[in-house]
Image 1: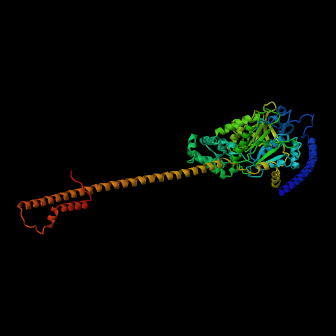
Image 2 (image 1 turned 90 degrees about the horizontal axis):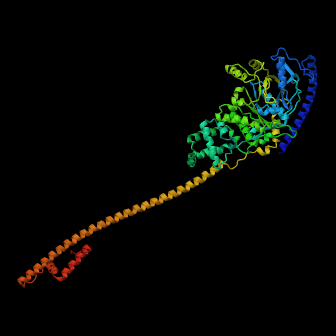
Image 3 (image 1 turned 180 degrees about the vertical axis):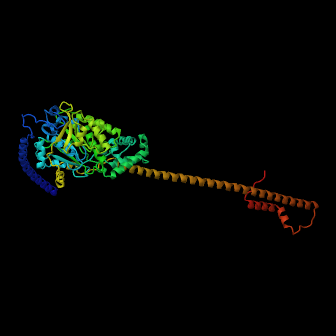
Length: 628
Protein backbone atom coordinates (compact mmCIF):
# COMPACT_ATOMS: atom_id res chain seq x y z
CA UNK A 1 0.00 0.00 0.00
CA UNK A 2 2.85 2.38 0.87
CA UNK A 3 4.38 1.80 -2.56
CA UNK A 4 1.09 2.73 -4.20
CA UNK A 5 0.86 5.89 -2.09
CA UNK A 6 4.41 6.87 -2.97
CA UNK A 7 3.69 6.26 -6.65
CA UNK A 8 0.56 8.37 -6.42
CA UNK A 9 2.48 11.18 -4.74
CA UNK A 10 5.20 10.99 -7.36
CA UNK A 11 2.57 11.07 -10.09
CA UNK A 12 0.90 14.07 -8.45
CA UNK A 13 4.22 15.89 -8.26
CA UNK A 14 4.93 15.07 -11.90
CA UNK A 15 1.46 16.28 -12.88
CA UNK A 16 1.98 19.55 -11.00
CA UNK A 17 5.33 20.07 -12.70
CA UNK A 18 3.71 19.32 -16.07
CA UNK A 19 0.93 21.80 -15.30
CA UNK A 20 3.44 24.50 -14.41
CA UNK A 21 5.35 23.84 -17.61
CA UNK A 22 2.09 23.90 -19.56
CA UNK A 23 1.18 27.28 -18.08
CA UNK A 24 4.59 28.61 -19.03
CA UNK A 25 4.24 27.30 -22.55
CA UNK A 26 0.72 28.68 -22.73
CA UNK A 27 1.95 32.16 -21.77
CA UNK A 28 4.62 31.95 -24.44
CA UNK A 29 2.06 30.68 -26.93
CA UNK A 30 -0.31 33.50 -26.11
CA UNK A 31 2.43 36.03 -26.76
CA UNK A 32 3.27 34.41 -30.09
CA UNK A 33 -0.41 34.20 -30.93
CA UNK A 34 -0.79 37.90 -30.43
CA UNK A 35 2.15 38.52 -32.72
CA UNK A 36 0.69 36.15 -35.37
CA UNK A 37 -2.74 37.74 -35.02
CA UNK A 38 -1.28 41.16 -35.55
CA UNK A 39 0.59 39.92 -38.63
CA UNK A 40 -2.54 38.26 -40.03
CA UNK A 41 -4.62 41.33 -39.32
CA UNK A 42 -2.09 43.45 -41.17
CA UNK A 43 -2.36 41.12 -44.16
CA UNK A 44 -6.14 41.21 -44.07
CA UNK A 45 -6.60 37.49 -43.36
CA UNK A 46 -6.90 37.51 -39.56
CA UNK A 47 -10.05 37.06 -37.47
CA UNK A 48 -12.60 39.83 -37.65
CA UNK A 49 -12.94 41.85 -34.45
CA UNK A 50 -16.41 41.84 -32.89
CA UNK A 51 -18.73 44.36 -34.47
CA UNK A 52 -16.71 44.72 -37.67
CA UNK A 53 -17.83 43.66 -41.13
CA UNK A 54 -17.48 40.00 -42.13
CA UNK A 55 -14.38 38.97 -43.98
CA UNK A 56 -14.81 38.79 -47.72
CA UNK A 57 -15.06 35.40 -49.35
CA UNK A 58 -12.32 34.07 -51.54
CA UNK A 59 -13.33 34.35 -55.17
CA UNK A 60 -11.58 31.07 -55.88
CA UNK A 61 -13.70 29.16 -53.34
CA UNK A 62 -16.60 26.91 -54.39
CA UNK A 63 -19.16 29.00 -52.50
CA UNK A 64 -20.47 32.38 -53.48
CA UNK A 65 -21.23 35.19 -51.00
CA UNK A 66 -24.84 34.10 -50.53
CA UNK A 67 -23.82 30.50 -49.82
CA UNK A 68 -21.20 31.70 -47.29
CA UNK A 69 -23.84 33.85 -45.60
CA UNK A 70 -26.19 30.88 -45.52
CA UNK A 71 -23.52 28.81 -43.76
CA UNK A 72 -22.82 31.63 -41.31
CA UNK A 73 -26.50 32.02 -40.46
CA UNK A 74 -27.13 28.24 -40.45
CA UNK A 75 -24.56 27.59 -37.72
CA UNK A 76 -25.49 30.47 -35.40
CA UNK A 77 -26.48 29.00 -32.02
CA UNK A 78 -28.22 30.91 -29.27
CA UNK A 79 -27.49 28.39 -26.53
CA UNK A 80 -24.47 26.26 -25.67
CA UNK A 81 -22.66 24.58 -28.54
CA UNK A 82 -19.58 22.65 -29.56
CA UNK A 83 -17.19 24.67 -31.71
CA UNK A 84 -16.07 22.45 -34.60
CA UNK A 85 -14.05 24.90 -36.69
CA UNK A 86 -14.17 27.46 -39.45
CA UNK A 87 -15.65 27.33 -42.94
CA UNK A 88 -13.15 26.71 -45.74
CA UNK A 89 -13.88 28.53 -48.98
CA UNK A 90 -10.57 28.54 -50.77
CA UNK A 91 -9.13 29.59 -47.41
CA UNK A 92 -10.34 29.35 -43.83
CA UNK A 93 -12.89 32.03 -42.86
CA UNK A 94 -12.50 32.61 -39.11
CA UNK A 95 -15.68 34.63 -38.93
CA UNK A 96 -17.79 31.75 -40.22
CA UNK A 97 -17.79 29.24 -37.38
CA UNK A 98 -19.30 25.77 -37.65
CA UNK A 99 -21.01 24.50 -34.49
CA UNK A 100 -23.18 21.72 -33.09
CA UNK A 101 -25.90 22.83 -30.66
CA UNK A 102 -25.34 21.01 -27.35
CA UNK A 103 -29.01 20.15 -27.13
CA UNK A 104 -28.87 18.34 -30.48
CA UNK A 105 -26.21 15.82 -29.42
CA UNK A 106 -28.90 13.31 -28.44
CA UNK A 107 -29.89 13.28 -32.12
CA UNK A 108 -26.69 11.24 -32.54
CA UNK A 109 -23.95 11.62 -35.10
CA UNK A 110 -21.36 10.07 -37.39
CA UNK A 111 -17.63 10.71 -37.69
CA UNK A 112 -16.27 9.00 -40.79
CA UNK A 113 -13.13 9.05 -42.89
CA UNK A 114 -10.27 6.98 -44.21
CA UNK A 115 -7.40 5.94 -41.98
CA UNK A 116 -5.11 8.84 -41.07
CA UNK A 117 -7.55 11.64 -41.92
CA UNK A 118 -8.04 12.84 -38.32
CA UNK A 119 -11.07 10.94 -36.99
CA UNK A 120 -9.43 10.28 -33.62
CA UNK A 121 -8.51 13.93 -33.16
CA UNK A 122 -12.10 14.91 -34.03
CA UNK A 123 -13.34 12.43 -31.45
CA UNK A 124 -10.99 13.98 -28.88
CA UNK A 125 -12.10 17.50 -29.80
CA UNK A 126 -15.76 16.58 -29.34
CA UNK A 127 -15.15 14.68 -26.09
CA UNK A 128 -13.20 17.56 -24.53
CA UNK A 129 -15.85 20.14 -25.32
CA UNK A 130 -18.74 17.92 -24.29
CA UNK A 131 -17.09 17.24 -20.92
CA UNK A 132 -16.28 20.95 -20.50
CA UNK A 133 -20.01 21.63 -20.77
CA UNK A 134 -20.69 19.31 -17.82
CA UNK A 135 -21.76 16.26 -19.85
CA UNK A 136 -20.12 12.88 -19.12
CA UNK A 137 -18.52 11.07 -22.06
CA UNK A 138 -17.81 7.39 -22.73
CA UNK A 139 -15.35 6.43 -25.48
CA UNK A 140 -13.28 3.40 -26.40
CA UNK A 141 -9.55 4.06 -26.78
CA UNK A 142 -9.00 1.64 -29.63
CA UNK A 143 -5.54 2.82 -30.68
CA UNK A 144 -4.42 3.87 -27.22
CA UNK A 145 -3.93 7.55 -28.00
CA UNK A 146 -7.04 9.12 -26.46
CA UNK A 147 -5.56 8.95 -22.97
CA UNK A 148 -3.67 12.15 -23.78
CA UNK A 149 -6.84 14.20 -23.29
CA UNK A 150 -6.22 13.84 -19.54
CA UNK A 151 -2.90 15.67 -20.03
CA UNK A 152 -2.61 19.35 -21.10
CA UNK A 153 -1.60 19.73 -24.74
CA UNK A 154 1.73 21.08 -25.91
CA UNK A 155 1.90 24.35 -27.81
CA UNK A 156 3.90 24.87 -30.99
CA UNK A 157 4.18 27.58 -33.64
CA UNK A 158 2.58 25.32 -36.22
CA UNK A 159 -0.33 24.57 -33.88
CA UNK A 160 -0.88 28.22 -33.00
CA UNK A 161 -0.69 29.32 -36.63
CA UNK A 162 -3.44 26.82 -37.45
CA UNK A 163 -5.65 27.71 -34.49
CA UNK A 164 -5.34 31.47 -35.01
CA UNK A 165 -6.16 30.99 -38.68
CA UNK A 166 -9.52 29.41 -37.81
CA UNK A 167 -10.37 31.76 -34.95
CA UNK A 168 -9.61 29.34 -32.11
CA UNK A 169 -8.26 30.76 -28.86
CA UNK A 170 -6.26 27.63 -28.07
CA UNK A 171 -5.20 26.84 -24.51
CA UNK A 172 -3.68 23.70 -23.03
CA UNK A 173 -6.38 22.04 -20.90
CA UNK A 174 -6.56 18.55 -19.39
CA UNK A 175 -9.92 16.80 -19.08
CA UNK A 176 -11.03 14.78 -16.07
CA UNK A 177 -10.78 11.13 -17.11
CA UNK A 178 -11.40 7.64 -15.69
CA UNK A 179 -9.72 4.64 -17.30
CA UNK A 180 -11.32 1.22 -17.74
CA UNK A 181 -10.37 -2.15 -19.22
CA UNK A 182 -12.40 -5.14 -20.37
CA UNK A 183 -12.24 -7.68 -17.56
CA UNK A 184 -8.89 -6.34 -16.39
CA UNK A 185 -7.17 -7.06 -19.72
CA UNK A 186 -5.14 -3.89 -19.95
CA UNK A 187 -4.65 -0.88 -17.72
CA UNK A 188 -7.84 0.37 -16.11
CA UNK A 189 -10.63 -0.42 -13.68
CA UNK A 190 -12.00 -3.82 -14.79
CA UNK A 191 -15.38 -3.78 -16.48
CA UNK A 192 -17.32 -7.04 -16.20
CA UNK A 193 -20.82 -8.19 -17.03
CA UNK A 194 -22.77 -11.28 -16.05
CA UNK A 195 -23.80 -13.68 -18.78
CA UNK A 196 -27.46 -13.28 -17.88
CA UNK A 197 -27.09 -9.49 -18.00
CA UNK A 198 -25.36 -9.71 -21.35
CA UNK A 199 -28.27 -11.72 -22.76
CA UNK A 200 -28.62 -14.37 -25.48
CA UNK A 201 -28.96 -11.98 -28.42
CA UNK A 202 -25.66 -10.17 -27.87
CA UNK A 203 -23.89 -13.41 -26.96
CA UNK A 204 -25.13 -15.05 -30.16
CA UNK A 205 -23.60 -12.16 -32.10
CA UNK A 206 -20.25 -12.67 -30.37
CA UNK A 207 -20.31 -16.45 -30.93
CA UNK A 208 -21.30 -16.11 -34.59
CA UNK A 209 -24.40 -18.31 -34.22
CA UNK A 210 -26.99 -18.64 -36.95
CA UNK A 211 -30.63 -17.77 -36.37
CA UNK A 212 -31.60 -21.31 -35.30
CA UNK A 213 -28.74 -21.53 -32.83
CA UNK A 214 -29.50 -18.02 -31.59
CA UNK A 215 -33.09 -19.04 -30.90
CA UNK A 216 -31.90 -22.19 -29.12
CA UNK A 217 -29.55 -20.17 -26.92
CA UNK A 218 -32.50 -18.00 -25.95
CA UNK A 219 -34.31 -21.16 -24.79
CA UNK A 220 -31.30 -22.11 -22.65
CA UNK A 221 -31.36 -18.68 -20.97
CA UNK A 222 -35.10 -19.11 -20.40
CA UNK A 223 -34.55 -22.55 -18.84
CA UNK A 224 -31.80 -21.24 -16.54
CA UNK A 225 -34.04 -18.42 -15.34
CA UNK A 226 -37.00 -20.73 -14.71
CA UNK A 227 -34.79 -23.28 -12.95
CA UNK A 228 -33.23 -20.65 -10.67
CA UNK A 229 -29.72 -21.12 -12.09
CA UNK A 230 -27.86 -17.76 -12.14
CA UNK A 231 -25.66 -17.33 -15.22
CA UNK A 232 -22.73 -15.27 -13.96
CA UNK A 233 -19.80 -16.39 -16.13
CA UNK A 234 -19.22 -18.63 -19.13
CA UNK A 235 -18.61 -21.68 -16.93
CA UNK A 236 -22.19 -21.33 -15.69
CA UNK A 237 -23.59 -21.36 -19.22
CA UNK A 238 -21.35 -24.28 -20.20
CA UNK A 239 -22.53 -26.19 -17.13
CA UNK A 240 -26.19 -25.65 -18.04
CA UNK A 241 -25.61 -26.82 -21.61
CA UNK A 242 -23.58 -29.84 -20.42
CA UNK A 243 -26.36 -30.73 -17.99
CA UNK A 244 -29.06 -30.47 -20.66
CA UNK A 245 -27.25 -32.88 -23.01
CA UNK A 246 -26.43 -35.35 -20.20
CA UNK A 247 -28.57 -38.31 -19.16
CA UNK A 248 -29.69 -36.38 -16.07
CA UNK A 249 -30.96 -33.48 -18.18
CA UNK A 250 -32.75 -35.42 -20.91
CA UNK A 251 -36.20 -34.62 -19.53
CA UNK A 252 -35.45 -30.90 -19.24
CA UNK A 253 -34.00 -30.88 -22.76
CA UNK A 254 -37.12 -32.55 -24.09
CA UNK A 255 -39.31 -29.93 -22.38
CA UNK A 256 -37.44 -27.12 -24.16
CA UNK A 257 -38.85 -28.38 -27.44
CA UNK A 258 -36.88 -26.45 -30.03
CA UNK A 259 -33.43 -27.24 -28.59
CA UNK A 260 -31.80 -30.30 -30.13
CA UNK A 261 -28.87 -32.13 -28.60
CA UNK A 262 -26.81 -31.38 -31.73
CA UNK A 263 -27.49 -27.62 -31.54
CA UNK A 264 -26.62 -27.60 -27.84
CA UNK A 265 -23.35 -29.32 -28.73
CA UNK A 266 -22.52 -26.66 -31.35
CA UNK A 267 -23.17 -23.84 -28.87
CA UNK A 268 -21.09 -25.62 -26.24
CA UNK A 269 -18.13 -25.94 -28.62
CA UNK A 270 -18.35 -22.26 -29.58
CA UNK A 271 -18.41 -21.27 -25.92
CA UNK A 272 -15.29 -23.33 -25.20
CA UNK A 273 -13.45 -21.69 -28.12
CA UNK A 274 -14.67 -18.28 -27.00
CA UNK A 275 -13.39 -18.84 -23.46
CA UNK A 276 -10.04 -20.15 -24.72
CA UNK A 277 -9.52 -16.81 -26.46
CA UNK A 278 -9.59 -15.11 -23.06
CA UNK A 279 -13.09 -13.66 -23.39
CA UNK A 280 -14.24 -15.37 -20.18
CA UNK A 281 -12.30 -12.68 -18.28
CA UNK A 282 -14.97 -10.17 -19.21
CA UNK A 283 -17.88 -12.19 -17.81
CA UNK A 284 -18.31 -12.35 -14.06
CA UNK A 285 -18.90 -10.29 -10.97
CA UNK A 286 -18.86 -7.61 -9.76
CA UNK A 287 -20.86 -6.38 -12.74
CA UNK A 288 -20.18 -2.74 -13.58
CA UNK A 289 -22.92 -0.29 -12.65
CA UNK A 290 -23.35 1.86 -15.75
CA UNK A 291 -24.27 4.79 -13.51
CA UNK A 292 -20.52 5.29 -12.89
CA UNK A 293 -20.27 6.58 -16.47
CA UNK A 294 -22.64 9.45 -15.63
CA UNK A 295 -20.39 11.12 -13.08
CA UNK A 296 -19.24 14.73 -13.00
CA UNK A 297 -16.00 16.07 -11.56
CA UNK A 298 -15.86 18.33 -8.50
CA UNK A 299 -15.56 21.41 -10.73
CA UNK A 300 -18.74 20.50 -12.62
CA UNK A 301 -17.06 19.13 -15.75
CA UNK A 302 -18.21 15.78 -17.05
CA UNK A 303 -15.90 12.80 -16.51
CA UNK A 304 -14.53 11.23 -19.69
CA UNK A 305 -14.63 7.43 -19.30
CA UNK A 306 -12.03 5.82 -21.55
CA UNK A 307 -12.11 2.08 -22.22
CA UNK A 308 -8.70 0.69 -23.14
CA UNK A 309 -9.09 -2.04 -25.76
CA UNK A 310 -5.59 -2.66 -27.13
CA UNK A 311 -6.51 -6.15 -28.32
CA UNK A 312 -9.55 -5.16 -30.35
CA UNK A 313 -8.01 -6.61 -33.51
CA UNK A 314 -7.91 -10.01 -31.82
CA UNK A 315 -11.47 -9.89 -30.45
CA UNK A 316 -13.35 -7.31 -32.50
CA UNK A 317 -16.78 -8.76 -31.90
CA UNK A 318 -16.29 -8.92 -28.14
CA UNK A 319 -15.36 -5.23 -28.12
CA UNK A 320 -18.17 -4.00 -30.34
CA UNK A 321 -20.83 -6.18 -28.75
CA UNK A 322 -19.73 -5.11 -25.29
CA UNK A 323 -20.28 -1.46 -26.25
CA UNK A 324 -23.74 -2.41 -27.46
CA UNK A 325 -24.38 -4.09 -24.10
CA UNK A 326 -23.48 -0.86 -22.33
CA UNK A 327 -25.97 1.05 -24.47
CA UNK A 328 -28.68 -1.55 -23.85
CA UNK A 329 -28.03 -1.45 -20.11
CA UNK A 330 -28.18 2.34 -20.08
CA UNK A 331 -31.41 2.20 -22.05
CA UNK A 332 -32.96 -0.14 -19.48
CA UNK A 333 -31.74 1.79 -16.44
CA UNK A 334 -32.21 5.45 -17.38
CA UNK A 335 -35.57 7.20 -17.01
CA UNK A 336 -37.36 9.02 -19.78
CA UNK A 337 -36.33 12.69 -19.83
CA UNK A 338 -37.21 13.86 -23.34
CA UNK A 339 -35.34 16.74 -24.99
CA UNK A 340 -33.12 18.77 -22.69
CA UNK A 341 -30.66 21.63 -23.00
CA UNK A 342 -27.84 19.11 -22.86
CA UNK A 343 -27.66 15.29 -22.86
CA UNK A 344 -26.95 13.17 -19.79
CA UNK A 345 -24.22 11.20 -21.59
CA UNK A 346 -22.57 11.13 -25.01
CA UNK A 347 -21.35 7.72 -26.14
CA UNK A 348 -18.68 7.34 -28.84
CA UNK A 349 -18.87 4.04 -30.73
CA UNK A 350 -15.41 3.74 -32.33
CA UNK A 351 -14.72 1.13 -35.02
CA UNK A 352 -18.49 0.90 -35.49
CA UNK A 353 -18.18 -1.37 -38.54
CA UNK A 354 -17.19 -4.19 -36.17
CA UNK A 355 -20.59 -3.99 -34.53
CA UNK A 356 -22.53 -4.61 -37.73
CA UNK A 357 -20.19 -7.08 -39.41
CA UNK A 358 -22.09 -10.38 -39.71
CA UNK A 359 -24.94 -9.14 -37.52
CA UNK A 360 -28.23 -11.03 -37.70
CA UNK A 361 -31.46 -9.23 -38.57
CA UNK A 362 -32.67 -9.44 -34.96
CA UNK A 363 -29.42 -7.95 -33.71
CA UNK A 364 -29.54 -5.08 -36.21
CA UNK A 365 -33.17 -4.44 -35.35
CA UNK A 366 -32.21 -4.18 -31.68
CA UNK A 367 -29.49 -1.63 -32.49
CA UNK A 368 -31.89 0.44 -34.57
CA UNK A 369 -34.49 0.34 -31.80
CA UNK A 370 -31.94 1.30 -29.14
CA UNK A 371 -30.53 4.18 -31.21
CA UNK A 372 -34.01 5.46 -31.95
CA UNK A 373 -35.37 5.27 -28.41
CA UNK A 374 -32.34 6.06 -26.24
CA UNK A 375 -32.55 9.69 -27.38
CA UNK A 376 -35.48 10.15 -25.02
CA UNK A 377 -33.26 8.86 -22.18
CA UNK A 378 -30.88 11.79 -22.74
CA UNK A 379 -28.07 9.76 -24.35
CA UNK A 380 -26.32 10.80 -27.55
CA UNK A 381 -24.38 8.33 -29.72
CA UNK A 382 -21.62 9.06 -32.20
CA UNK A 383 -20.58 6.25 -34.52
CA UNK A 384 -16.95 6.47 -35.66
CA UNK A 385 -16.00 4.46 -38.73
CA UNK A 386 -14.35 4.67 -42.14
CA UNK A 387 -17.32 5.10 -44.49
CA UNK A 388 -21.05 5.68 -43.92
CA UNK A 389 -21.76 2.39 -45.71
CA UNK A 390 -20.34 0.59 -42.66
CA UNK A 391 -23.49 1.62 -40.81
CA UNK A 392 -26.89 0.14 -41.85
CA UNK A 393 -29.27 2.56 -43.52
CA UNK A 394 -31.83 2.29 -40.73
CA UNK A 395 -29.18 3.41 -38.23
CA UNK A 396 -27.71 6.04 -40.56
CA UNK A 397 -31.14 7.61 -40.91
CA UNK A 398 -31.17 8.30 -37.15
CA UNK A 399 -27.92 10.32 -37.16
CA UNK A 400 -28.44 14.08 -37.09
CA UNK A 401 -24.79 15.23 -37.17
CA UNK A 402 -22.32 14.22 -39.90
CA UNK A 403 -18.58 14.93 -39.83
CA UNK A 404 -17.09 13.35 -42.92
CA UNK A 405 -13.30 13.35 -43.31
CA UNK A 406 -11.49 12.54 -46.53
CA UNK A 407 -12.58 9.50 -48.51
CA UNK A 408 -10.37 7.71 -51.01
CA UNK A 409 -11.45 6.36 -54.37
CA UNK A 410 -8.51 4.18 -55.35
CA UNK A 411 -10.62 1.10 -56.19
CA UNK A 412 -14.03 0.52 -57.81
CA UNK A 413 -15.45 -0.32 -54.39
CA UNK A 414 -14.06 2.94 -53.01
CA UNK A 415 -15.61 4.88 -55.90
CA UNK A 416 -18.96 3.18 -55.26
CA UNK A 417 -18.75 4.03 -51.55
CA UNK A 418 -17.92 7.65 -52.44
CA UNK A 419 -20.97 7.99 -54.68
CA UNK A 420 -23.16 6.45 -51.97
CA UNK A 421 -21.80 8.89 -49.38
CA UNK A 422 -22.38 11.91 -51.65
CA UNK A 423 -25.98 10.85 -52.22
CA UNK A 424 -26.73 11.03 -48.48
CA UNK A 425 -25.91 14.75 -48.12
CA UNK A 426 -28.31 17.64 -48.64
CA UNK A 427 -27.89 19.59 -51.87
CA UNK A 428 -25.13 22.22 -51.84
CA UNK A 429 -22.88 24.27 -54.09
CA UNK A 430 -20.05 21.80 -53.53
CA UNK A 431 -18.95 19.11 -55.92
CA UNK A 432 -18.88 16.69 -52.99
CA UNK A 433 -17.37 13.88 -55.00
CA UNK A 434 -14.34 16.06 -55.66
CA UNK A 435 -14.22 17.78 -52.27
CA UNK A 436 -14.39 14.56 -50.24
CA UNK A 437 -11.35 13.17 -52.01
CA UNK A 438 -9.35 16.40 -51.66
CA UNK A 439 -9.90 17.23 -47.99
CA UNK A 440 -6.71 17.83 -46.00
CA UNK A 441 -6.03 16.09 -42.72
CA UNK A 442 -8.09 17.81 -40.04
CA UNK A 443 -10.75 18.97 -42.50
CA UNK A 444 -14.22 17.56 -42.93
CA UNK A 445 -17.57 18.06 -44.62
CA UNK A 446 -20.08 18.89 -41.87
CA UNK A 447 -23.82 19.05 -41.60
CA UNK A 448 -25.71 18.96 -38.29
CA UNK A 449 -29.15 19.75 -36.86
CA UNK A 450 -29.72 23.31 -35.78
CA UNK A 451 -31.58 24.25 -32.61
CA UNK A 452 -34.89 23.89 -34.43
CA UNK A 453 -34.05 20.35 -35.55
CA UNK A 454 -33.50 21.27 -39.21
CA UNK A 455 -30.35 20.26 -41.12
CA UNK A 456 -27.70 22.93 -41.49
CA UNK A 457 -26.01 23.76 -44.82
CA UNK A 458 -23.16 21.51 -45.88
CA UNK A 459 -19.92 23.15 -44.77
CA UNK A 460 -16.33 22.39 -45.69
CA UNK A 461 -14.75 22.84 -42.26
CA UNK A 462 -11.22 23.15 -40.94
CA UNK A 463 -11.57 21.55 -37.51
CA UNK A 464 -10.24 22.94 -34.28
CA UNK A 465 -7.30 21.38 -32.43
CA UNK A 466 -7.87 19.45 -29.20
CA UNK A 467 -6.67 21.18 -26.04
CA UNK A 468 -5.37 18.00 -24.43
CA UNK A 469 -2.23 16.17 -25.49
CA UNK A 470 -2.39 14.36 -28.80
CA UNK A 471 0.16 11.86 -27.50
CA UNK A 472 -0.79 8.97 -25.19
CA UNK A 473 -0.35 9.42 -21.47
CA UNK A 474 2.92 7.84 -20.24
CA UNK A 475 2.35 4.27 -19.01
CA UNK A 476 3.58 5.00 -15.47
CA UNK A 477 1.25 7.98 -15.13
CA UNK A 478 -1.66 5.94 -16.48
CA UNK A 479 -1.01 3.13 -13.99
CA UNK A 480 -0.81 5.64 -11.13
CA UNK A 481 -4.15 7.16 -12.20
CA UNK A 482 -5.81 3.75 -12.20
CA UNK A 483 -4.38 2.74 -8.83
CA UNK A 484 -5.69 5.94 -7.26
CA UNK A 485 -9.20 5.48 -8.66
CA UNK A 486 -11.93 5.15 -5.99
CA UNK A 487 -13.69 2.60 -8.22
CA UNK A 488 -10.85 0.09 -7.91
CA UNK A 489 -11.96 -0.99 -4.43
CA UNK A 490 -15.40 -1.94 -5.78
CA UNK A 491 -14.54 -3.44 -9.16
CA UNK A 492 -10.86 -4.33 -8.93
CA UNK A 493 -11.21 -7.86 -7.49
CA UNK A 494 -13.17 -10.59 -9.24
CA UNK A 495 -15.62 -12.60 -7.11
CA UNK A 496 -17.07 -16.05 -7.74
CA UNK A 497 -20.58 -16.32 -6.26
CA UNK A 498 -22.72 -19.44 -5.93
CA UNK A 499 -24.21 -19.77 -9.39
CA UNK A 500 -25.33 -22.32 -11.99
CA UNK A 501 -21.94 -24.07 -12.17
CA UNK A 502 -21.82 -24.77 -8.44
CA UNK A 503 -25.54 -25.55 -8.16
CA UNK A 504 -25.47 -28.05 -11.00
CA UNK A 505 -22.29 -29.61 -9.63
CA UNK A 506 -24.06 -30.25 -6.34
CA UNK A 507 -27.12 -31.51 -8.16
CA UNK A 508 -25.03 -33.85 -10.26
CA UNK A 509 -23.20 -35.11 -7.16
CA UNK A 510 -26.50 -35.72 -5.41
CA UNK A 511 -27.85 -37.43 -8.51
CA UNK A 512 -24.69 -39.56 -8.69
CA UNK A 513 -25.09 -40.50 -5.02
CA UNK A 514 -28.76 -41.33 -5.58
CA UNK A 515 -27.82 -43.31 -8.66
CA UNK A 516 -25.17 -45.18 -6.69
CA UNK A 517 -27.68 -45.93 -3.94
CA UNK A 518 -30.22 -46.96 -6.55
CA UNK A 519 -27.63 -49.17 -8.22
CA UNK A 520 -26.77 -50.73 -4.86
CA UNK A 521 -30.45 -51.32 -4.11
CA UNK A 522 -30.93 -52.70 -7.58
CA UNK A 523 -27.95 -54.99 -7.13
CA UNK A 524 -29.29 -56.15 -3.75
CA UNK A 525 -32.70 -56.77 -5.27
CA UNK A 526 -31.09 -58.63 -8.14
CA UNK A 527 -29.07 -60.72 -5.67
CA UNK A 528 -32.21 -61.47 -3.65
CA UNK A 529 -34.09 -62.40 -6.79
CA UNK A 530 -31.22 -64.61 -7.86
CA UNK A 531 -31.18 -66.25 -4.41
CA UNK A 532 -34.89 -66.83 -4.69
CA UNK A 533 -34.41 -68.32 -8.10
CA UNK A 534 -31.58 -70.46 -6.80
CA UNK A 535 -33.72 -71.60 -3.86
CA UNK A 536 -36.58 -72.36 -6.23
CA UNK A 537 -34.22 -74.29 -8.47
CA UNK A 538 -32.87 -76.21 -5.44
CA UNK A 539 -36.39 -76.86 -4.24
CA UNK A 540 -37.43 -78.04 -7.67
CA UNK A 541 -34.35 -80.27 -7.88
CA UNK A 542 -35.07 -81.68 -4.40
CA UNK A 543 -38.70 -82.25 -5.32
CA UNK A 544 -37.65 -83.92 -8.52
CA UNK A 545 -35.14 -86.09 -6.68
CA UNK A 546 -37.77 -86.93 -4.02
CA UNK A 547 -40.25 -87.80 -6.74
CA UNK A 548 -37.65 -89.96 -8.47
CA UNK A 549 -36.77 -91.61 -5.14
CA UNK A 550 -40.44 -92.18 -4.36
CA UNK A 551 -40.91 -93.62 -7.81
CA UNK A 552 -37.87 -95.85 -7.34
CA UNK A 553 -39.17 -96.92 -3.96
CA UNK A 554 -42.51 -97.67 -5.56
CA UNK A 555 -40.77 -99.78 -8.17
CA UNK A 556 -38.74 -101.48 -5.42
CA UNK A 557 -41.92 -102.21 -3.43
CA UNK A 558 -43.60 -103.55 -6.55
CA UNK A 559 -40.61 -105.78 -7.24
CA UNK A 560 -40.57 -106.89 -3.60
CA UNK A 561 -44.27 -107.62 -3.76
CA UNK A 562 -43.71 -109.74 -6.82
CA UNK A 563 -40.93 -111.58 -5.09
CA UNK A 564 -43.11 -111.99 -2.04
CA UNK A 565 -45.98 -113.28 -4.09
CA UNK A 566 -43.64 -115.62 -5.94
CA UNK A 567 -42.19 -116.87 -2.67
CA UNK A 568 -45.71 -117.19 -1.30
CA UNK A 569 -46.68 -119.26 -4.26
CA UNK A 570 -43.58 -121.37 -3.89
CA UNK A 571 -44.34 -121.76 -0.22
CA UNK A 572 -47.89 -122.72 -0.93
CA UNK A 573 -46.78 -125.25 -3.52
CA UNK A 574 -44.31 -126.69 -1.06
CA UNK A 575 -47.01 -126.77 1.57
CA UNK A 576 -49.40 -128.52 -0.74
CA UNK A 577 -46.72 -131.00 -1.72
CA UNK A 578 -46.01 -131.68 1.93
CA UNK A 579 -49.67 -132.05 2.61
CA UNK A 580 -49.96 -134.44 -0.30
CA UNK A 581 -47.15 -136.52 1.06
CA UNK A 582 -48.66 -136.60 4.49
CA UNK A 583 -51.91 -137.62 2.96
CA UNK A 584 -50.20 -140.43 1.03
CA UNK A 585 -48.48 -141.74 4.13
CA UNK A 586 -51.61 -141.74 6.10
CA UNK A 587 -53.62 -143.50 3.41
CA UNK A 588 -51.28 -146.37 2.99
CA UNK A 589 -51.05 -146.64 6.74
CA UNK A 590 -47.54 -147.67 6.38
CA UNK A 591 -45.67 -148.19 9.55
CA UNK A 592 -42.45 -147.78 7.89
CA UNK A 593 -40.31 -145.41 9.79
CA UNK A 594 -39.55 -142.04 8.20
CA UNK A 595 -36.45 -141.86 6.36
CA UNK A 596 -33.78 -139.84 8.07
CA UNK A 597 -32.61 -138.45 4.73
CA UNK A 598 -35.62 -135.99 4.24
CA UNK A 599 -35.47 -133.63 7.18
CA UNK A 600 -36.69 -130.50 5.15
CA UNK A 601 -39.96 -132.14 4.31
CA UNK A 602 -40.45 -133.12 7.89
CA UNK A 603 -39.71 -129.61 9.07
CA UNK A 604 -41.98 -127.85 6.55
CA UNK A 605 -44.65 -130.23 7.25
CA UNK A 606 -44.72 -129.43 10.91
CA UNK A 607 -46.44 -126.32 12.42
CA UNK A 608 -43.15 -124.99 13.67
CA UNK A 609 -41.72 -125.20 10.16
CA UNK A 610 -44.52 -123.21 8.69
CA UNK A 611 -44.01 -120.43 11.22
CA UNK A 612 -40.28 -120.30 10.54
CA UNK A 613 -40.87 -120.06 6.78
CA UNK A 614 -43.18 -117.07 7.17
CA UNK A 615 -40.66 -115.21 9.32
CA UNK A 616 -37.87 -115.82 6.79
CA UNK A 617 -39.94 -114.45 3.91
CA UNK A 618 -40.93 -111.41 5.95
CA UNK A 619 -37.33 -110.71 6.90
CA UNK A 620 -36.19 -110.90 3.31
CA UNK A 621 -38.81 -108.57 1.79
CA UNK A 622 -39.36 -106.30 4.81
CA UNK A 623 -43.07 -106.27 4.34
CA UNK A 624 -45.85 -108.55 3.44
CA UNK A 625 -48.93 -107.61 1.56
CA UNK A 626 -51.36 -110.33 1.57
CA UNK A 627 -53.44 -110.93 -1.42
CA UNK A 628 -57.04 -110.20 -0.96
